[in-house]
Length: 144
Image 1 (tube, one colour):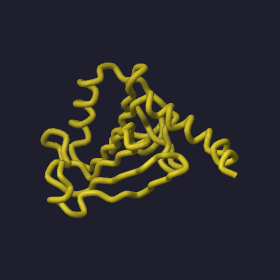
Image 2 (cartoon, one colour; image 1 turned 30 degrees about the vertical axis):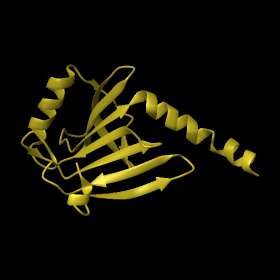
Image 3 (tube, one colour; image 1 turned 135 degrees about the vertical axis):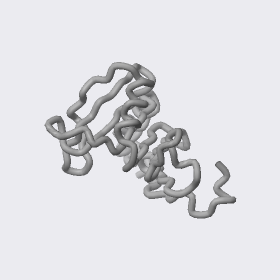
Image 4 (cartoon, rainbow, N blue to C red; image 1 turned 90 degrees about the vertical axis):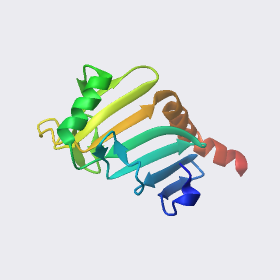
């Protein structure tokens, strides 16, 4: 997508030079959809300019989006480790050694299935970003 023809198509919400992570939110544009289902916004995280995490947020067609996600990924596993701030989320995901996808709903494992977001992660780049963040104090000490 050419952002020069669509001003304000995205907002950089964080650009941390220490961790090498940049967070971007796309909240306008005709392409904010999964098929025919509209999205509220798309969030992306980049490590050293490489996309490694995409989040899709939606309010409509929750059941249909869940069914599409489940159809694409196959059998899903429950995952009770996800939170949004301090709120526990209901989560069902699928993954392998390259990619992980999860669909989320408010309410934790005892909550409903009022799905409102999907997160997809490139495992290798995420691990690299985590290691880079852990190594930040060592890099800072070398610079002194």
